[in-house]
Length: 159
Figure 1 (cartoon, rainbow, N blue to C red):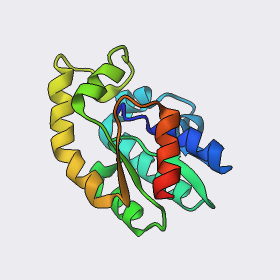
Figure 2 (cartoon, rainbow, N blue to C red):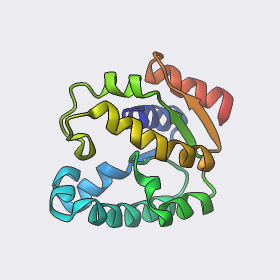
Figure 3 (cartoon, rainbow, N blue to C red):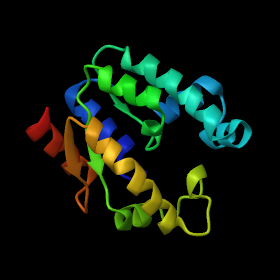
Figure 4 (cartoon, rainbow, N blue to C red):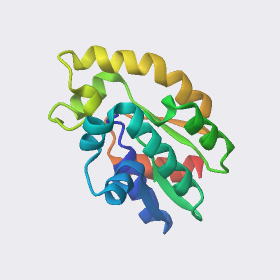
């Protein structure tokens, strides 16, 4: 969350001449409602079920760039889909301090609707980061560089 997946992914796709898909955006197009509303009505379990279906659909498209939601890896089926794909998996590793800065004005993310955002991000990172690392083909540490610079680094060193 707040790593730059959508921004970096769209730049990568543009630079490489590939189609770009963001799982959350595709879900919103398909359902006609926001991810927040899906979460509100169907709770996280319902959202994750829809997310799995969309991930499976996108992984079966020809060469493209896919930005997943940060929590996509909490579902075992999603981890299996990712692991079994022929895709290059780039993990944008972001420190909690950077996430807090990037998400400081964000009021839309359902999992951050809490009094202690920092602790929530710390808890999520403790659980998720080892999973991201285990699935990743390559890990790119994010920092203060621009999304364009990160995309350039990924193309130059990893693709």
